[in-house]
Amino acid sequence: MLGHAALALALLIPPAPTGTTPAAACTAPAPSTTQPGYLVADPDCDLDGTPFTALPGARVSTGITGGAAYRIEVPRKWNGGLVVWAHGYRGTGTTVFVNNPDLRQHYVSQGYAWAASSYATNGYDVGQGVRDSVALIDVFRKVTGARAKQVIMSGASMGGHITAVAIEEHPRAFAGAMPYCGVLGDTTLYDYFLDANVTAAALTGVDIEFPLQPGADYQQVWRSQVGQIVPKLGLPTGSTPAGRTWSAVLERASGGDRPGFDGAFAYWNSASSLPPLADLPFLFGLYPGLQGGTGGIAPGNVTDNRRTFYRSTDRLWPTAEELRLNRDVLRVRRTATADPGLAGIPRVDGNPRVPVLSLHDIGDLFVPFKMEQVYASRAAHNGKSRLFVSRAIRGVGHCDFTAPELTEGFDDLTTWLRTGHRPAGDPILNRKAVAAPTFGCRWTRGTHPGFVAPACP
Image 1: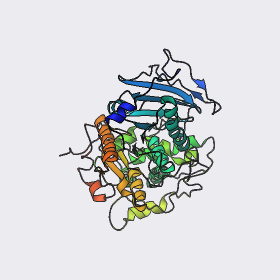
Image 2: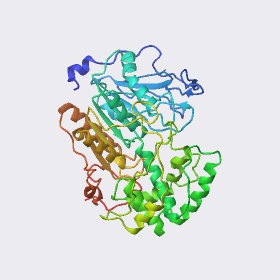
Image 3: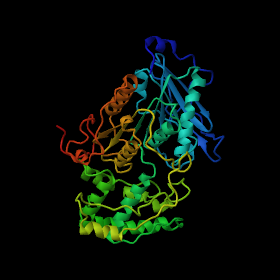
Image 4: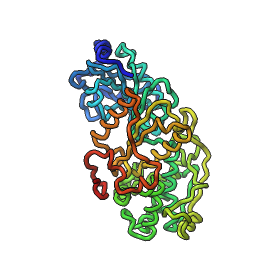
């Protein structure tokens, strides 16, 4: 627990060491000392050239260590707490950069210091993100001359995966955690990408492959196949019979029947995918077969659907249409699994030793709401349900949260740490509760563009 006012006064940050205050002008990215071919952007500036300066009543420190840039900010009236914040996926470029957390202003106003890292690598390198984020605890001590009395781990998207792994790998280092829009189901995210694409192909009668070693021409082959699939589905709305069935399958694969899914389906199928396949509807550019199912970092294919039975209804017995789909769908066998350490795609056991409060948009079809359910199921299996609170937000985007939603979550987490009283969340494993028209109303604050559902009472 954090100390009282006397402790806060005793832990005022000392003057910043020489060389840690931001420079007056931005400098060019410097070659990495640990990753050949990488550059590390100036931590004293944002990529657009905006200088990184302290908020009123705070001091900042910046630097580069182990090939990763870092930023640290400590309020003068520091309460002894430190938030280590982990950013999300940034593609596969070779320039790394550090940025500020979403709740920067709130952390400082509440007396918390924060620290963030660029990580030494890009790509889906969760292990490197964990190493560089955990290292910030010691960097903070060396830079400020003070040891944090309480450390909270937090991160968004891939940073949520980093958060979940960090608190399991280093349980004594952290007092609590707040992942949001996080990949809390490790390789099940890639299974979801597989499910979306193979069912779309099966429902439209388009034969596809899953090459473990894609050839140079495979992207173009896939483009041609998606060009046949999309009109047969009637995207973006799914206006054909096959499209309506695919929408129902995708809804169940991403978290179950829930409010606002039709709008989310149209939103994500209207969105362009990630480069180099930005010409395809979003989920089709994420087909795991495009990179051999490795996630770009695993030692083999991490996806598997041999035992998956796809449903488009919630009936007790499968329909004839569901039986046909499961007969026709391409089956894929994994050759690699989530890694128990920090290699490849690190495994999330769902075995936290500290309180975890998470938020997720129910309309997110990139990192779907199902990630929360996977983590909740694993935590229940490990007897740790009491340490996990999940809150559903009625948003359609990825990491589509309002400031009040994030600040309320953080404040409730810190109150939990201070008092020991577990805050409320949503019953995300209760299928009927998730399907209720009011699901997500309790913790949604403000409006979320694109989310279409009956208004909350």
